[in-house]
Image (cartoon, rainbow, N blue to C red; front, side, top):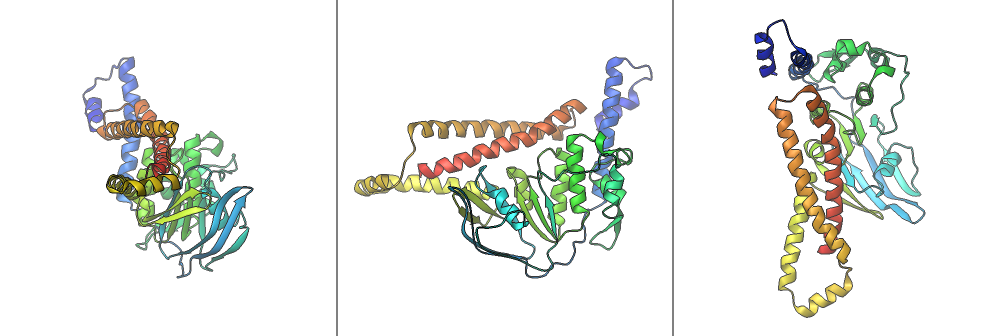
Length: 364
């Protein structure tokens, strides 16, 4: 931004086509820069409604669809101010578990007991339902005119929207004129404006640009309440949760005391140690172990090796994109393209990582 600002100061008034294009790009970058400056000045530390010591208790929950086991005698006591991430391959039951928690699905057996003071804020993939003829500001003001901050100050609905990158001009746009990403952002605002004390976010990083993700990360880090996040975005999860529920399929759910990166490093270290132990084991014992457990097929071995190459390539691409986004040298189009590519890249990276972890069980 500073480079473009200096160019604007030096550039003569009679500008050619390329110069006009760069001038338009400058004003777009200026909007983003001003918004980031505003966000740094206003710390979004919202005052969550009171939450008691009892959050929710899951007692021997079971759920299945035909032959697919989702929950198998699952029990858990959720602690006050806990921030949990849920990860796993598609079809392992993550969204079903969330729907049971929100009362949208019923377990086949078992009891889910939710505390009386719990006030959910639920962000789902199916939740985009607005009156298309309403203005953005009216959608939010229908929920609340102001929000209370933790320091005793207040934010108006307009200031809150500005924090989530809705300019004063955009706030007076009609909903039907919003892009898909802007609609997701508005939906997120409507969830947060209800002042929940327990946020349940199902794939919140989909379709959100990188600046909005940074705002959401900061919000969740300061949030004085409980959080459950379902996401394939490892880097987002690392910043906002303190432990994981890992859904491995067929009712196998593991509670891991760390973030996504910790889990992956633990799995890799575990695999290295078991490979090392295999070299030292007695040949007769090794033969028994081989007979007891299914090993990788030739096809799975090839897939496993290819996944390692793919993951390395995706991580390299991610590092390049993040470096470019931080460089300040991109045009508006490049900034937009790379911001859109990053969530898709994260999804692909984490999907391949989960498959790699699944196959690594057979390699042990």
